[in-house]
Image (cartoon, rainbow, N blue to C red; front, side, top):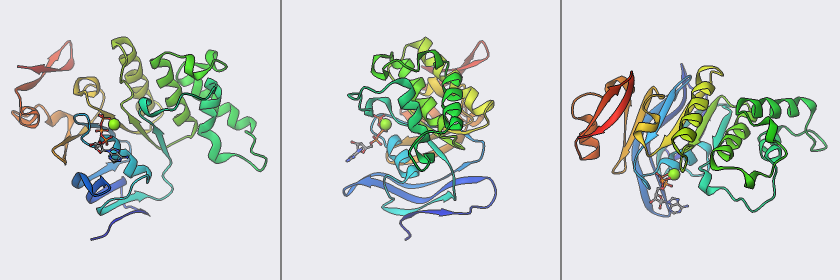
Length: 257
Ligand SMILES: Nc1ncnc2c1ncn2[C@@H]1O[C@H](COP(=O)(O)OP(=O)(O)OP(=O)(O)O)[C@@H](O)[C@H]1O
Ligand SMILES: [Mg+2]
């Protein structure tokens, strides 16, 4: 069986396609037989418990790890913006907010390794988008968790991606911080028109934003459109406990019965 990540021209709206993909580390299988695609303009949530392999899927999309079985087809020249899980970030370096966002332009550096005035404009626009232009000279490590997260989103935006991958962007944030990040991601999808893949282990956080969900459980993945997940028994079966999706004030909520 083919085992590769290949860049290709995929027909139609598909940007990425997983064909019978298995992923793992040093002989340990994390995920098996993944079959799904990410289409242009999708707002996809990847959901599952800690350690089930959500970050691993993102790493396979960016090419950091290769499938142990199957193949991943990825649309040629697709520009990927990757917002890493904040906990993985090394914060020992004294970077300013601006330095961190400028990293999003490094692939476009010219002959002398300097940012052009256009690069700087894109950096400032990205900071505007996350409402942090006024803090661009502040050291990154002195920011709050929510502000750091917004800087990381600005860094990915500065890369001018077509597909944005976000790994647990609301981890460790309070409810107000969580809402602010989710509203920002909503805007990135709806106003900037980016295809978005967001990873979370909390269904209630992404439920009211995403349009499709990839549920990961026991090394497998199941794709569902958001209007189908209320189907009787689906969520309960998945979580092995009685869970329902209800509505309060027009918003979907997760109810443990
Ligand atoms: N570099 C690595 N080497 C070996 N095993 C790893 C490596 N990275 C992750 N794993 C293992 O692979 C499995 C999936 O890890 P992954 O980080 O993808 O999970 P996750 O769903 O993103 O978890 P979390 O919700 O905690 O972020 C875990 O059992 C983890 O211990
Ligand atoms: Mg993870």
